[in-house]
Image 1 (cartoon, rainbow, N blue to C red):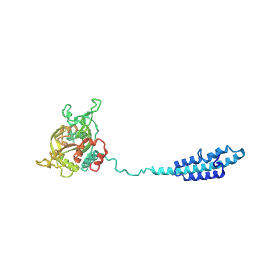
Image 2 (image 1 turned 90 degrees about the horizontal axis):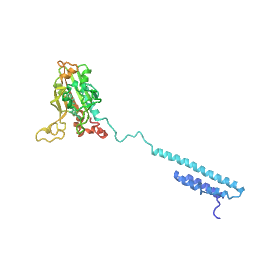
Image 3 (image 1 turned 30 degrees about the vertical axis):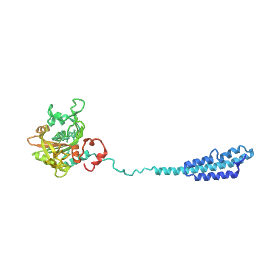
Image 4 (image 1 turned 135 degrees about the vertical axis):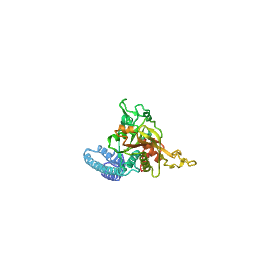
Length: 359
Ligand code: FA5
């Protein structure tokens, strides 16, 4: 047999020095693992030396065993120490690389208040600034407030005018309010005269969803009851609201209409904010917003019907009042050229954000 004696002290010392240098030079845990196989594995000088001890005569075994054991121990210790050091370096690096800075702001805000909330507050502010009060009523309303007190007769065809969602069980007398007008009744019953209230709120109708109709939508109601109130007060108030919402110079127009709870009743039109009425003339540029009518339909209004005043315990000989109600989605659609009412109810934050500063 030939080759170096694995138990030769010089060979063992060289193996020890080589192992220590190799462990110290390992730059990563995988590299250290390779080095370990080389210097402490089954075919390493230490392993070969251990196997060679078996072939030594008895008296030499102890001496050689001590040397090989010392070599194995120092190599193992060097390996362990380097492993601890490389693990520490790896943990530090991972912590730094995977750190999350929770204070970093997102690139764009991910939401905004809903435009219907903002427009409701804006309209309410216009009236609160004139000394009016904000009024509220329930969305699940009793038919008496939604219809009867508003002069809709029991079998009056006007009840069919507003496709109602009735609340079960049948005969409960409860409906999802079809308009904000029941708040007129609640306000007159709850308050001392004179009454000046504004009421934005959600209403429900069995209308199919299309570009301009939704089964859930928002209205704002206004009611003023005092001595000597005339339609002139109504016109002035509506013009003021139109200016506050759409800007200076836009006129309103009223056309005869029918509501059971107002007499006279009127349809409320707003001068087209896009063409300002100019498209209505012959030979003028056509306007897509108002179909060249010059006006757009905004809501309903009128003088409070004496029967409604009586239902609320108010003397119609002494007091009179006006009321109006308009759709808030429609208000925003006019104002921003929004083509589908669905945009208000789809919850797309891009839509909400696009109207953030405007509503
Ligand atoms: C009413 O609801 C009356 N209560 C308004 C009123 C109040 C008249 C006070 C007189 C005095 P009308 O059904 O026309 O009226 O609805 C008013 C507005 O609500 C409409 O002009 C429209 O802007 C809006 N609107 C009606 N139905 C829908 C719907 N399905 N989706 C969205 N907006 C609607």
